[in-house]
Length: 336
Image 1 (cartoon, rainbow, N blue to C red):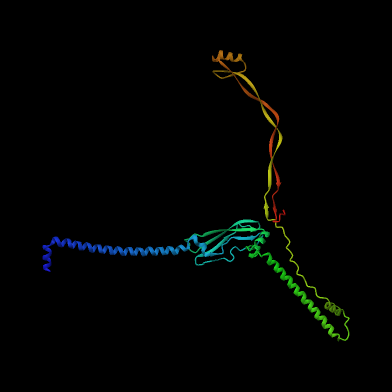
Image 2: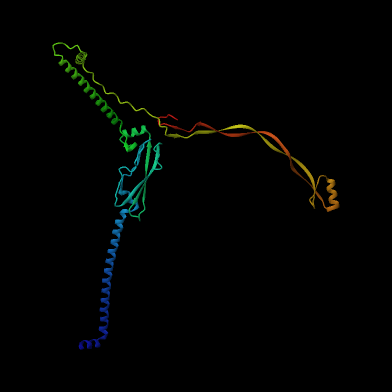
């Protein structure tokens, strides 16, 4: 130990810089180690924040409608009733609290296009609700049948889907076939009853009973096949749901009127230049100016209204002419 002290004492100029360099290296190494750990920790925190933001982004106002199924545009037959705009509606109850619909602007009694508003309310109160606007098109019964025949979905009363014309014909044919089968069954029963009566007569004598005659006539004549009746077309009923505004134009006619026109007369007078007193003749103003004011006078004049005259004149008057009054029409063109 003494040798070391002696060596340091003799070589201070060498030892001290070396010690300083070693201390600086140790300090630098510690600093870089701490900084590396701090950067790694910050990157972990930032990554955690990004993952949290990414998971939270699934429940933003912009994407709320992705958790709801059933929002759509509607095509409805005019006059339809009991329409449920939330039918077949589903949503993710983990994200969505409720879905409401505002159909106050929809008028099912008149043809046209209307706005239908859906409000999607999230469970998370920090997220604003989302409003989705869809279109409800109310069409006439004739157009609804055409759209149904094309395969397009048209809603009628009670949320029923408009059937195709072919489906209606098929239902009518099924009903006719059912009636035919019932008729054949009843004829068969009558024939069996008549045959039973003939057997009871013993078979030795011909039965002259009316039932026997009916039976023989039925046996001799072939039964006529019942032809299916064509389906009866529904009778068109006027609904008068289309409002047609009034049509009119303006015409101008000439009419006469009496007008009071004022009458003016030019009157002259004399005025003193000093006191501005008015005089009707030159003698009086000359005497006044000479004896009183000692000045000159001026001749003046003006148009003074003296009365009215009645004159007959003409003027243009606008008159509204109604070409077609406001009324309600049916889709077939009939008007009320």
